[in-house]
Length: 267
Image (tube, rainbow, N blue to C red; front, side, top):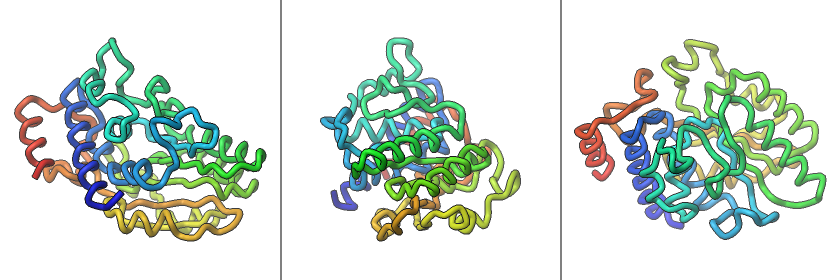
């Protein structure tokens, strides 16, 4: 897919997020920050399609920061994994479209709720693939605030010890967790150096630029090392009044805001 096509899809995903934020609210700011990264994963990077969700040779994509699920659901809708009309049922008891990933949605590999769990799951899947001598790739997205959870660093130690160079850890580095900046709560920097000390290959990129994302994801793999892609992003990207604001976390749009924000995304 061309960058222009990916940009169009990203705009549509943002519109889906706004729809879900109107229907009962969602974690709007965080979902907006990882749109391009999610679209790149499904549009160019991961070997998975609506026809191969049960294929043992597929790649695996996990969303560990589950509250960002509107970006995942919107992306899956754009790539044909589920009907976009189902997103209108957000928080409706007639469907399973709600605040965290649900495995009844095609393309969702594992449920996510409490933060810090899915890197361990992804590491287990990557290790299983290595033990079977297969070449599937495993991708897992984490929020930067999620890195406060010790289980993530334990999982990285296991992945490095078992040479899981089929594992790519994607960090949505928007510098905000909940309603605080990460560096004001438990500082993460120097983040790239920490991953390197834990035995990872590290690539950094602009998480809203498809050329930059391609450079990071396509960088030659260092044998035996898990890869970490630190995607620098902005919370609320696409909405001027929400961008990089710590107070724009969970949000329910009224009809006037919904119409205004839709026009802003379209523009």
